[in-house]
Image 1 (cartoon, rainbow, N blue to C red):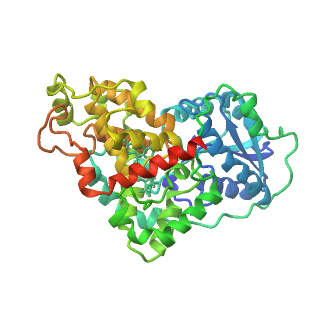
Image 2: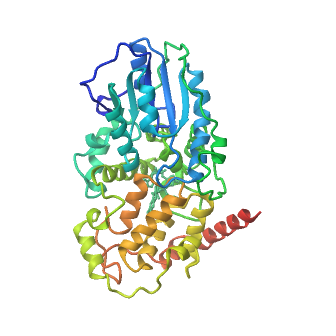
Image 3: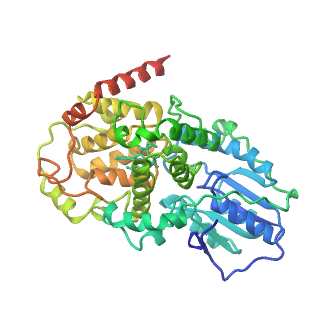
Length: 455
Ligand SMILES: Cc1cc2nc3c(=O)[nH]c(=O)nc-3n(C[C@H](O)[C@H](O)[C@H](O)COP(=O)(O)OP(=O)(O)OC[C@H]3O[C@@H](n4cnc5c(N)ncnc54)[C@H](O)[C@@H]3O)c2cc1C
């Protein structure tokens, strides 16, 4: 089911009768299941008895992306190729400039479908491409449960502001569907063959920083669905009570799949609800917190650039009042990046991220709070956190990351009791980690990963 609120179109340009196919430019929803953009493309193709061409563009210099991100994404694209072809859908993967390639493919199309663009790089690209296409374009929001502007008409102050509105709309929007069958499966001629993804690392992507990684998982829709199944069967029941323990492996590890659009949040939502287990804790993160992050990035264009324009007034005032407070330690980006501070818990968190592309959620909070404490200014802390998070996390460059980092500075939060450097912005310390968790076990877990990285 495609709710009309998900779809926007430049309706002044109608269906082009001379077109040979429907074109879907797949970029942020790299999946088949519960992909409303793919479904709309199939339905429109069926309505006009046309074949469907899906194209995916590998951008050589996507802002902030390095080899670990591309590899994870390519693993998913390889699977998609087989799956889409099995559905009678033509799929081509090209490398290069979207502003040339998409308008090129659109020349022979009757209409064009885009999927979501939330963060700045893709949003700008899509706007520019749309200007260059002389065809009707349908833009489909498929990577959120409730479309952002339908959920809430402005930037939400905190989760409480948006929670009820989201919950109220879930019954209508959190509905999965079976993909329609494409009727016209004729082969589309003169479509350039897909590039060979692996060999791109020796050619057009040879400039990318390698950043070796201990793979916790392969990328792709199959892996995502398997992981979800195993989490619902074995982890969901205890998620609410233990997911904040860094020493346990008690979270879903779905964030990278969701980030690349290999898994729909609707699929996760439905599977969790269907299981009959207590899903409240997971739904709070996956649905409320995640869509609060999307609300933030959609309505606040400064999400990754200017602290003063993203924080609530009270937090700006508190950080300013404590700007001159003496910092007990001040670390450069290099020391932080190497995980060589005096704090073994923090170093373990940094190393977990560098080695595996993942950091436990509780440690992400601690990690961010400590960078604030150990930086000369909040602005420097903000810059370094964005850099490290987006470089190493497989799920980096995501609205969740921008909201999570802003949260460390008081965004979407409330004042707490006053202390140095932070003022009334929430503070976290190592004692808290020791008191609440078996934090030494977490350090040991990361140490074993380090050993593994040498072998
Ligand atoms: C400083 C900081 C940086 C962060 N950077 C990122 C990032 O780059 N990318 C990213 O996806 N998340 C980020 N988060 C949010 C959160 O920590 C991760 O989404 C979560 O730890 C991922 O692990 P999981 O999939 O096992 O999560 P689970 O606990 O299993 O949660 C299920 C899903 O819910 C969503 N989710 C969970 N926690 C949050 C949250 N706090 N806010 C929004 N959505 C959430 C994610 O999509 C996640 O996959 C950051 C948080 C902080 C404090």
